[in-house]
Amino acid sequence: MNRLSGLTSTTILSKVVIVFAFVLSAVLGIWFSQFAWGLRQLFIIVMAVVAGLIVLTSTEKALLWGYYLCIVAFGLGYRAVWLNPQVSFTVPQVGFTVPEVMIWVLFIMLLVGRIVYRQPIPRLVPIPIVLLLSLGGLGVITAAIHGRSWETIASEFKLLLVLMPILYATAELVTDPERWVQCLWLLVITSFYIASLGLIEYFAPSLIAPLQGFFEQEHIEYSAQSFARAEFSFVVAAFASTLLTLAALPALNLAIKARTRGRKAFAFACFVLCNLGIYISGYRGMWLALATALLAYALLSWRRGWLLLGPYAVLLNFLPEEAYHHIYAVFDPIQYYDHSILGRQERLRFALELIRRSPLWGRGWGGCGSSHSDFAQIAANLGIPALLVFLWWYFGLMRKLYGLARGSGPWSEYARGLLATLAGGLILLGTEGITVAGPLIIPFWFIMALAGRLVALAESAPAESDYHLSSDQ
Image 1: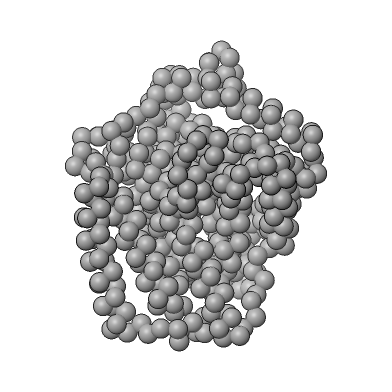
Image 2: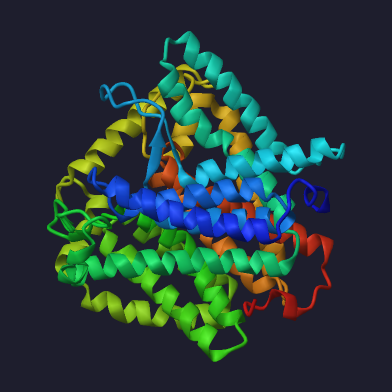
């Protein structure tokens, strides 16, 4: 990465630019607030200016901080820059979230550095993903043949295409265990922030009254079974619960691996808050995903895992009746009437019918809308071969993590947590349909990229000391 150090100076001039960028961001934020923009917009502006600064000072350290900023930007939630206006429900908006934009910028800067210094571009994207992207390109042609709008094609294809810069930037920038652990810490801290604000909004809405630029007026939504669901209005509940589900087990891993009591306590508090945030979100897919992840972790870490499940068994006895009805509706939506589950069943039947009609090539992007099952979604849009390629990559990564998890080395605890998270991820993919929801799938791809990077680091330095993978970085 020293090849990038000559692109610009990072001395006093850079520090002046940083100060100027934040002052300019504040001024612009105050100005935009006159047009009913709030603190969210101010933070987005700050992020955008800092991201631009990273481009201008494209040294290795600046680009690494840009990658870290991509993870922190998950705290902005469902906020996106839209390329087209919402004109009808049949024509989707094409938008890019802040992490999405930043990872593409980093990807381009990394490639530019390679080209400028005439260095070969390494193959850092796994073969299954190259094949999947190729089939995704074929899906663009298929969709165009079926007369889909460019908005429909772009809004779905870009969510698969972004896998390439995520995997590439992760491999280029997360080059040692210390950086890898720092990425995990940033993910967990961001989740702690989201969970904390969600809990405050849910249990003490009066405390957030002065921050109306952050929150909406409605803080709670009631399900068909009268379960009070948190809105997480500053990031949207669907995104919040997805990120918290992905961060729960990594937070527990950091609590176990930390060397100081303070860090252990903070990481465990993050784990607890992730659990509470998932519960109040009311998303049953996330409930089941967390339960699956915890069970998988218990099977991988026998003593510690089963000791962890004990408190959950006790807490189940104190849940309100609405919570049980909320989950019963998943299995019997007729008796415990739930129009959401019935609607999802209908969408799944439609997707399966499309797969039956076109099993090899699918119907192209946008072929089945949102089936709420990514496995059916991929097969219906891109064909059964594309689904098999995706499963090849997913289960191949799980198999490698399992090999690390079975050992007792410095990598094993993190491998157990990520393997359990990916086991829970199968529930998310099977029930929530996150591959067609940009803000939801981006953090999922990041987790996959970090899992793959852990495997690569373990293979390249199997004798790495436990110090380098402690969470005290």
